[in-house]
Image (cartoon, rainbow, N blue to C red; front, side):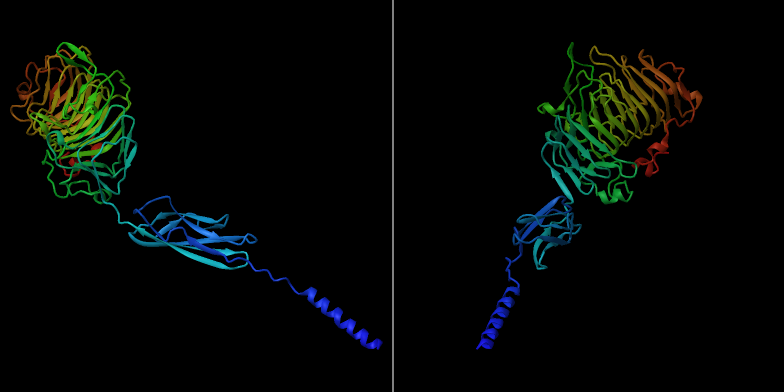
Length: 482
């Protein structure tokens, strides 16, 4: 009897012991992941995009994620899951079409869950048509062609940045609908091209493209460098002093020519000679100068009351129907400029511009090579023009000034001089000639001067400009500038 009781007790004790040694079974909630939306669209080359994935992980566990992309570049491809969502940041790929992001979540139990977000990358936008004024700072990039669909103004307080190698084209338009880019008073342009990647302003009829510019092909592939008047031009307006009048009364501000008087963004002039309208470097302006009215065309580059804070260096104007570059007062300095095949004057100054033009070329313009007018109001200031090279073939007069013009002309050479081309009004008291060379015989020199030949005007073949600094231009690459 005692033996049976002992055996029963042993069996009971063993059963209790074995039961206590079995592991407790814990069941965790399933780990899941899904995109907040199944698919989405992004623009070609779009940056800083994101997609949210909803994640569910048992609170007792931890988890990590990994993300892979097709036709997208993911900036946070792995990390720790925190909370109920994971945000994947990405940039659009370089090819139009379908792409995807696959997110895989792995919990601390080694279980995985994956989900896919489908991305559709839109095709690359090759052209952008502009029809509204620019009222906030913006950038025109070199991967697109920017079309001026009218008179586009960068308004006061805004800055327009244009990347090197960018092509801007103006639609056809005349009168009040003439296309032009205007930098209004108080606005800025930051158009800093390079010799390898100049910024091109031209007409929509021109087949030049950003790709051609990137290849170093700056010439128009289909338009001759004599075709003009197909769009407007570039106009920069500032707050520097001008010499203008209405009857006998001085005016500190006036409306720029080429812009209808109904547009207040066309006003220029003020009292700040150090005014800053931005930067213009390595730009070529072509085939412009359309009429807005009888005898009222737009210049290639118009500078109205522009101050010394503005940088203008390496500028080319080709085939403009009106003047190449015209200054209306202001104090801005301009260097390394080329004007070629313009329908009126090469360099035109008005209203007491007080800056300096240094190192330039004027080639085969139809009007005067230089039209240098005097002050119109009581403010009187002069300017300097130096280190120039002029091919005068087909032009009217070599230098035309008013009786009250104020200008110093230094180190300028003229070639291709016709029988009737002259320097006019050499007796103007405010005009000085120094180191001016006409490529004619010594005996013919008086024929080309209206009056007694000034001591600073000489006969002989010279080149006074540093043409190497102008080698990036269409004029130079065509072989004309030599």
